[in-house]
Image (tube, rainbow, N blue to C red; front, side, top):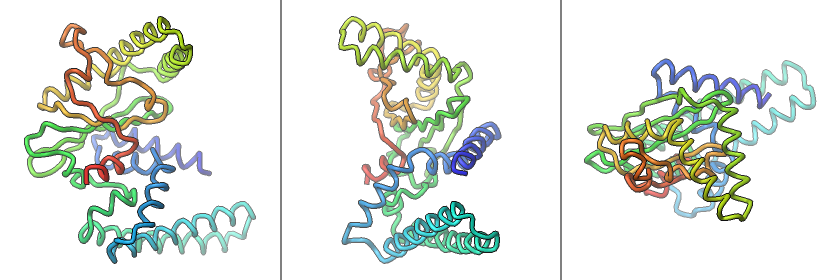
Length: 272
């Protein structure tokens, strides 16, 4: 059931980017990319003694939602009657509506708490990440079963714009193979193998998607960028890819000030 749901959400992300609806895709990636990290973030926030009333109410509803989801999963495993499952589904829907209203209230009264609870952020919630002048941006990667997707977030006027893209030249099996080769070189302890593996991996990243990402950022005057990797990408040296517009003489991290974050919510929380 969980695998089917994940597959449906992954397909939705791809289709939304293709349909030029990156804001909706961005909302879904936040829900599916880092669930364990989000749960730890929530647990840390719940332990705080300075929560506002709206944040405490939101926290209580999240706990009720988690408990109800566990109850529903157990009922499915126990093969409860359709009527029982339907009643739990209805209860979940009502609770989800309460949670939606609580999230709206929290966004209005205590927006800083949204990131602390790992709630999916809307584009304008990221505004504190991007100072006036448009020099900062964020790239949220999503590694699907068939494609590498990325979502660019950057300041535009008084708000935040989201632009989606797909790496057209990247084949996932090839990506996995190159990543595994990099891991082997890294774990060998042999300096020569590590150096050769790094050069190969960096060039691969350049050829497949980082060169075009660099061009996109420069066209918009962005020189500070936060990468939000996904899956095995967390172990890749994205900032060490060469830049084609400099005849490969400069590395990505020499042309851009690069930060990494585990998830969008954690990066937002760090900035606050």
